[in-house]
Image (cartoon, rainbow, N blue to C red; front, side, top):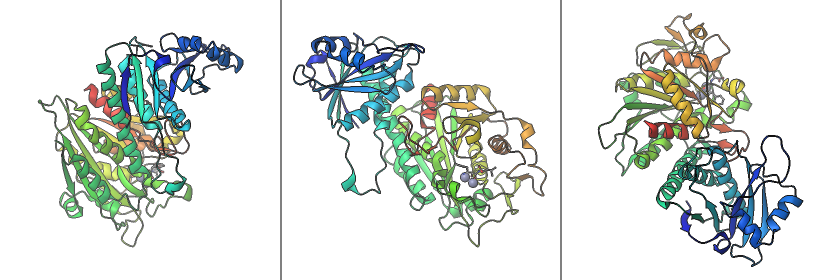
Length: 505
Ligand code: BES
Ligand code: ZN
Ligand code: ZN
């Protein structure tokens, strides 16, 4: 993580490898050179350099589009060695995610220019109703997320190490909330990067046992408690659906329960459930090549929960949080479940497994039943449940469904501020079609092609009246291409949403 300091010096006097200034794009479709500001030192530095900055903007027709930038070597005319003009987009579009994207750009530009120490100026005034602290938190998130690499398996000789170490902020207001916001943003992003690491690690290593080890490591030395059930205990708990999924695996399942309690009496009790399928081959309903090759990502819900719990001692929400992770591998073997087999859930409901690839909902159903015994006020689950969400929302939005509109609205709000947009799909009973036509109480796969909705409806059969929201992160948890501060591979989707939601409770 970065060192963070304040300075009272004027921009032209700050000792830094780079001083960043903003350049804003004209509104709407209007063309033309971008605008410099007085507040961040842009116009002052332009004057000190004899108009060089505005000349570059004009001659190179730099419009200030978000993410665009220009580098200027200052050649000893002022103290900072380089100036970078950073395009920040239009005034209307400026929001928290703009700050994250800019943070990520700053990290990448700085490492690209081999800079160790960078500086910029920020103003205490609100911008588009965002306080300086809110903007600084998002910027720090972007800096840390944008610097993420997964290079554990690469030849170290070929790697260009990042150089950026120190951020110097010129700020003329109360610095306390700003440095707090910077460190909060940094630790949240660090936890997201941890979730990314877990998802990117091959399934061969990231087994149910390893997930359990991660959870005990997270709780050790903190006020959190952690309980791990092994295969025998899962049997004793009568979690027949978890056992059915993991029958063909040589890596046995685990059931993990992590617990956080606030210092004062908890206002609410929230249960979080994360799907932890460490590899989803599909079972005998084997997945095709293009899908199976990324199925180490099927524990992304569990990874997000581990990251969220890791943050608990830092964010210390006022609510009690119980995180439950059913972790299992969905594999093929002589002992694996066959399509058509029937399993008995912990709740007593029987399930005819007409499709062995619909395994996530089986794990979640038993986890719900266990969690419900602790009488939570809310249940929120995070799961890479259905590939069908790709056709509804692509890779960008997470799908949300549930039985409590207030909870859903609050999660959507938190997801938006966290830069992880979420869109609601209807939990409409009619889509339950086909689930009850077999010889058991339920099939695990229905007849509609709206798999994201029917998957959630299957889950709702195990929820009862408890307030519940389901986030289907099947596509948002894994990126197939780089986008802003998210890179090909695990994205850490869900962490921001849950953290911001819990902090607002
Ligand atoms: N793990 C998959 C869902 C998935 C697909 C996650 C693509 C990430 C990327 C899940 O277990 C599954 O296989 N779901 C089926 C459900 C269908 C058969 C109703 C699917 O999406 O095909
Ligand atoms: Zn599956
Ligand atoms: Zn799956």
